[in-house]
Length: 398
Image 1 (tube, rainbow, N blue to C red):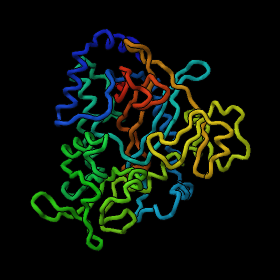
Image 2 (image 1 turned 120 degrees about the vertical axis):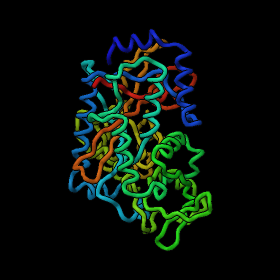
Image 3 (image 1 turned 60 degrees about the vertical axis):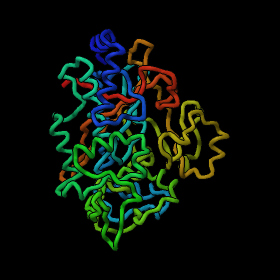
Image 4 (image 1 turned 180 degrees about the vertical axis):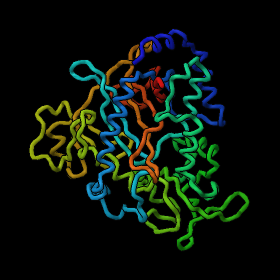
């Protein structure tokens, strides 16, 4: 943390500044987020930035292994979830780190989750702009990594998502997108890239051809799919009227192939060994269980947004698991409440938002997302009636 910057921000904060921030975020594209926005960005020093980047590199060492596909072949649960035409690398990778303290009190990131799936790449840009609009933030503090700026950041995202296609031939695919909590990110993405946000039910299929019907009644071929559909939700919409199934082999390229949602996921955690990764095991491969279960978390492999996580497992809970091959046992970490706010300290986690371009040997970090909490866990239901919590962004000195 950077104490002098934190102190100055808190001293200069007013409700009017927060209102101006919210007005900017809600008004720039005529729509606001459905989730709470934190009153402050998080200012992190060079030491913690370096640790986060080192953690991403150590984890990426596993993701780039030649045998990674073989190691994760069982990640799908059932073979009927495997989508054809898988590419060689995940275009998007998210690594979520809880900011913790070790036994000596040193601040250290600890991996909580990772995803081979897109995140709020464009909303985070808007969020940062909102903070700058409402507060005097030194330009030396940036959310980007690798020496990029706003223009090169957006060009990187355009290159990955649109490629050489006409933007109208690229769709961002979701289920009833207007109802999603992340809809604000879809709107910003569409506005900046010129691509269409499309519900899966509106995607048409004729043989191997995919298309949609535009507002003028014209059929528009779909060449690239920027997938934002979470499989857990798709399985809950079995009644959705649609012509296209993900397992259909069609003449369209996935940008963020669906298989990576499974390959880079909670399933990957037991494959990782790093000081930045808490111990984690497949429940089915344990022959004996830790005696200190109060320091462990029981997680289902195939769930989303914290569903089914048991923060306080007992031996009875473990013995009651019917499918141990679908669960993880992960050592619990304790977030450090190191963000000083006017209403008490807060803790947070940082999502390192990564991309992996076709011509590059390794993924790279380009932006970040922060979630601030004062509750037992990160998330809305653990932070009801609290302030200085919610979605934010980390700013680092450059």
